[in-house]
Image 1 (cartoon, rainbow, N blue to C red):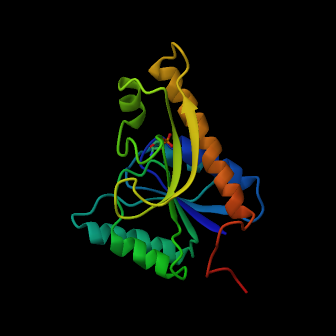
Image 2 (spheres, rainbow, N blue to C red):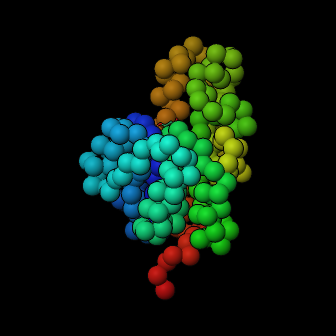
Length: 200
Ligand code: GRF
C-alpha cells in the first residue's frame, strides 16, 4: 500500500507516519510532497531516506494540482495523507484521484479540533482563548471544503487545570501523531478499503 504525504510545514505528523510505516510491512510512504521550498518536512524525509518533491505554487491552481496528480499517478499512490498541507484540494482533483480507486475516497487529513468546531488555522489557540474545557483531534476524509469531510476517528483532549496553551499544544501534537499512526496501522492491516493499483 503506497502512501503519499502532502505537507507544507514542520512535518512532525509526517515524521511520525514515515517512522511508523518503516516499522510495518504492508505500507510505505512512497513520497513526501511539499508546496513550500525549504519546509522542515523535506529535511525530515531526507533524514529518513524517503523520496521527496517540491511542487511550488503555480499561477494556476489547476496546473499545480495537475503536477501533483501526475506524481500520484506515476508512483501509483493508493492513499494521500495530508499533514499540515495549507491548501484546499479542488473537487476535480479529488474526483480524479478517487476515480482511480473505484470511488472510494482515499485522501485523509488530521485536524487539531473536534470538528466541526474550530476548522481552519489556529484551532488550538482559538479553543484555548474561548475557555473550552476540552478539544481534541479529528481524522477525516477530505472533501473540497475546509476540514469538512466525513469523520473517521476522533480523540478527546481535555484542558487540565492551569495548563498553558504551550503545554496543551504539545499534548495535541502527541495525540495527533498517535491518532494518525493508529490509522496508518489500520490501513496496513487492510481494515480500510485499499487500492486498485495493487499488483495481482
Ligand atoms: C498539525 O496540527 C495538523 O493537524 C495541522 O497542521 C499541523 C501540522 O503540524 N493540519 P506538523 O507540520 O505535522 O508538525
